Image 1: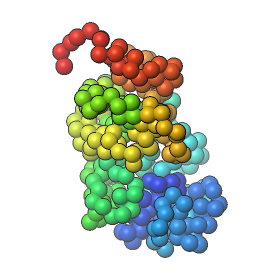
Image 2: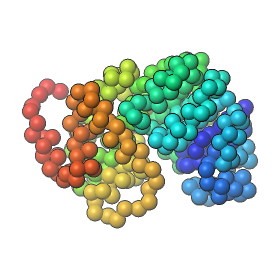
Image 3: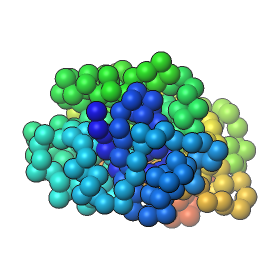
Length: 318
């Protein structure tokens, strides 16, 4: 079948490689004509060196062409760009929209934002522990596709699944989205802790207590707490909070290690921390760790100072 992918970054191209492996024709949308030409003429990308993409993968810089190519739209654009890009095309209720970007926009998850426009839209989200380079290298990977419409989730499961890319289904789209977004925040925190050499005890305490903070946001959006203990939750947290393959972890590490920052691409957690800070404030959700990161990043507090403050909060039961 024909499938459209919006976004020619690492993750969009990794998913394109999976779909082409499953013999689907894939059209990738990229604004940069040089990237389009490189994919069409050379089957290469500047993002993924020494890899030749399938001839089933084509590219275009025409959004209209990309949207008309397929009724299955995989969205791998930065969250802040998704709404403006897709709004003109939402009148076509036949299409299925699959969000793969992770974050919040104006205090909304992607599904809640688009459901406000039309509750009949067919929406899904793909998430889980999955570094793009390992997917392209065909290393075994497990993810979850969530949709309120189980038939949609099962259809997408069949489209994506193969012998190295295993897809589970869920109907908890809100829980999957919240977990996927907030884990980037904790990846930044863990990178900072490692960069400042604050120790494994500190990092693992922050991850564990951070999961407790995530529960409040999952509840707010009507998600299922059990999702926190699945692929989109603890699975993705374990991956991104411990590896330089994560741009969010790398950003945090560079922030506190004193090393010169390198170009590491879009750091989704930076926008997410602003969104979560506002969401927790407006809805009276107790998120001391998350809000401490906000103070470090945007009010320039010292990470050791906020660590001292966190350790000296009023004692309580776990």
